[in-house]
Length: 407
Length: 131
Image (tube, rainbow over all chains, first blue to last red; front, side, top):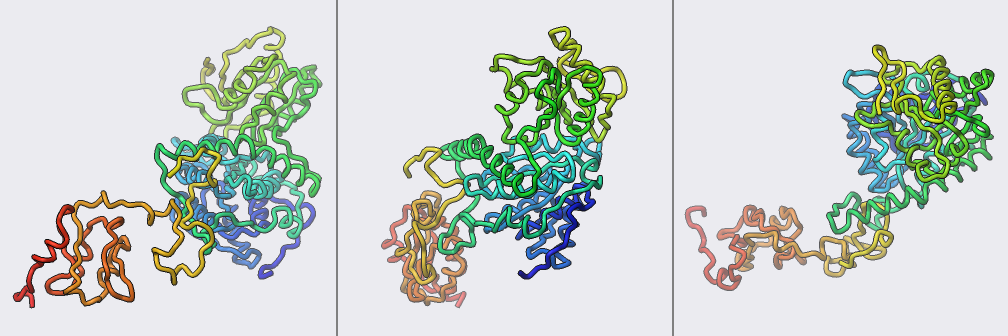
């Protein structure tokens, strides 16, 4: 091979950004087209350094915007190569037009999204506004809670995205700064083991197959557009989850690390639980354990796969619980939070519908403290004791000023 | 084109130009290529045109300027000689006429309904001032 391998220790001290960059190096990507933006900059910066130092055989394309970055990735993916990039926040927002192109063209691209708030006011810290902005774009979305997850989910993302039965682009989300810039011990895979998991890129309908010329990005009007969108939705609804489960199973055999479409914690006998994403999951788990010492049977459900949404898996995880809090780290701006709505939808036609309340928290990097979660679990227990939701259905946590509650 | 259901076509916003594998495409004339029904070659867009070029071979010197400049590959040349215009794809832009160097020009624009034989019979004479 024309590139050098890197000797890694079994456990390296990496932040989420460097973990993602290392995973990208080990996957040997053909083209990275990128326009760096805080807090995801070190991913593509790290990858560019690996390339410059001879650890990667590929192309790094410096472009003039995030719209161009994703456009470059789309072109390279249509040409027939393994492609990835990274972005955050405003950059992600500028990419949105091309995100729909990538998924509609059924191109496997891995996008590391280091979650950050959306302006205005301008803010570089972590919330899930950009993640939520992408949720109708036809991409598969994984959520990492820590640097280890960010590393592992990159391999799983390539594996699922490039599968010929899937051929859909894939985002790997991690929380800006709290995951991306916080160094933790990360269990590594050797270069050979990591690469063998994702395997060689297998082209499909590639433009570089000159014996079978194809035109990518065609126009369709009322006569064909609906059928194309229906096909894409069908494949997201029926084909992706089984492939994700297989990839999770294979990855567990390889690494011993087990991922689940819905991550449950102490849910077997839980009366109350929070459903959340990102680093909040780990905080909530710690608080849930402490609540049990106070006699509140608390559990936590973390969403690992945001799209396609685990409609039935969520209902199954929540079927025996009595009160649920859906935590949304993005301002719904005029309705209930996304998780509240999704969970309500998955539970509505089930026999036992638990009491469901929604919370908006952590906007612009505002901390979700253990004290917030202690109060929240106690509120859920009060709901259980009263047999009804005792508060309004939507409350804000951690914002200064008079209490905000709606619905 | 038959209207297929959502599960009856290949995934992606993608169309194939040819049916099956192709080989030596540069050495195969357009009319001998296995263009698919999705190729624009098999679709007539003649109704996009309001005025049309008429070719008068009496003055053509086969310089190939029109063939090179045509933005729609609608000048049909064989053995480096202009033999006609692909009227299924010509949009009537007039660039071929503009670049034609002969005097009088070998290609001129006429209304879509003009009769080719009539117009060739009354073709303009050599412009002595220009010469």
